[in-house]
Image (cartoon, rainbow, N blue to C red; front, side, top):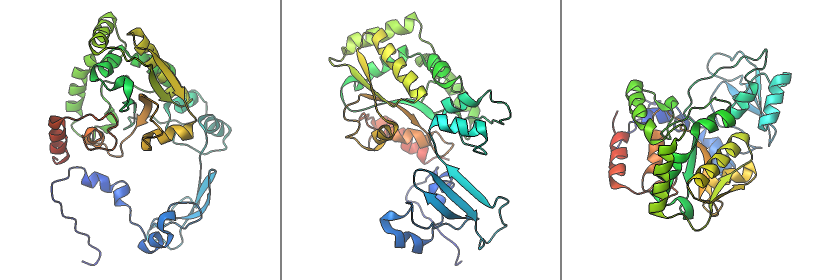
Amino acid sequence: GAAEITIRFKTPDALFTKALAGDAGIVWNKEQVEKAGRDFGTPGHPDACSGPYELAGWKSGDSLTLRAYDGYWGERPLTEEVVFRWASDSALVNALKTGAADGAYAESPDTAAALRDVKGLSQYYGPSTATLDLIPTDRGGLTDPRLRRALSLSLDRAGIADSGYGGLVQPWATPVGSGSWGYEQQTFAAAQKELDALAPASPDAEDLAEAKKLVEEAGAPTDPVVIGTDSTQGRTVAANAVRAALQRIGVEARIKTVPTAQFEEFYSDPQARADIDVLVGDWYISKSDPMGFYDNGLSDSSNNWVGFEDAAYDRKVHQALSTL
């Protein structure tokens, strides 16, 4: 019919319907998008959506205001106006404590930890698709997989969880958290349990001995391993834990701390991360399916900074991406 869209595939895509629930499923007003051109989605331009709210104001760096849209085709929303403000972790905590904000999505676990004992504040927690990861780059220190394995064996994940994030995160053996298990949860949980021994929550003497042996085999880097981070509490704790773990096994390391705005550039700009060996990063996926993460390890992925390449891995991931 006139309102029907048909999509045909060259190969099966198990994530497609999940992608439609995210950015891929947004219906835009074509005329507005083309009129704004490259400036679409920036302050000073109208929105191009079809929902119950319209963009009433956008003060760059301060706030964004939505107002109920009179011409909406469905039921009128209960809230006439919504104002979104963004702020640093400490300002967000203060706004909630004083009532200046009606609510917040505390995406940072250390922000949530600071609010946990505040009276009169309702709080809701659940599993997330976000993970706190160490992301190696293609230079120097951790390009050898034996050194990455040694770091994994010597890292105090439980310590990072407690002191960096108020116990609101879990020490974990894989880069995909339980919030990503949208199906087959018992299968994933059983597999995760098998992997726990490979990435200890708190390393013991045996783990450290194995890590030192791997460093001896690979040879310690001649230059210190540079750990990239910003000054937020959780990342600072994680960066110090990484340095301590490396030093325990005979690898020299130093921390490079940059402003948060500059830190965000590490993810997208190879030049920005040209001077670091490993990023204390965080990563999330927009679908509750682990394959939304593991495709980042494909040999042709732009997010595969370290240049990991394995034909068997590529085959397995492509097979999984095509399997419901």
